[in-house]
Image (tube, rainbow, N blue to C red; front, side, top):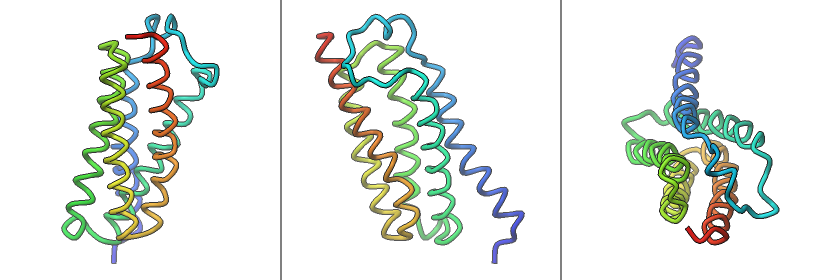
Amino acid sequence: MIRTTDNILAIIIWVGVCLAVGFIAGRFSPGTWYQNLIKPSWTPPGGVFPVVWTILYVMMGMSGWIIWREIGLAAAVIPIIFFALQLALNALWPYIFFFLHRPGLAFAEIIVLWAVVLVTLILFWMKRPLAGALLLPYLVWLTFAAALNFSIWRMNRI
C-alpha cells in the first residue's frame, strides 16, 4: 500500500513534469511573426491557450500518476514510453511553429503527436479507463490545434 505522503509527492512529480514541459514549450512564444500571419476567424484569443494548456498538462499528469499508482512502472513500460514520447513531441511543436516559422513541418509534427496521444490514450484506457479518459480533452484540443495549424499554413502559403 502506498502511503498518502508518497501519493501526494508522486502527484506533484507527475503533474510537475507535465507543467515543466508546458513551461519549456511556452518559451517559444508566438511573437510578432505569428501576430502578422493571416488566421482563420475561429482562432481563439491568445489568452485562451495558456489556460487550456495548463488544464491539459494537469490532466496529463494525473493520468500518468494513475497508471504509475495502480499499475506500476514495470507493468506499464510501453504506455509510459508512449506518454514520455507524447510529452517530447508536445514540447517540440512550438519550437517548429513559432521559433523555426515552419507551419507545414509543424502540421506534420502535430499529426504524429496526435497519433502518439491516441495510442497513449488507448494503452492507458486498457489499463485504467479513468487514466485514458483524462487524455480525451487533450486529444480533442490537439485536433482543434491541428486544424488551426493547417489553416494558418494554407492561408499564408508558407
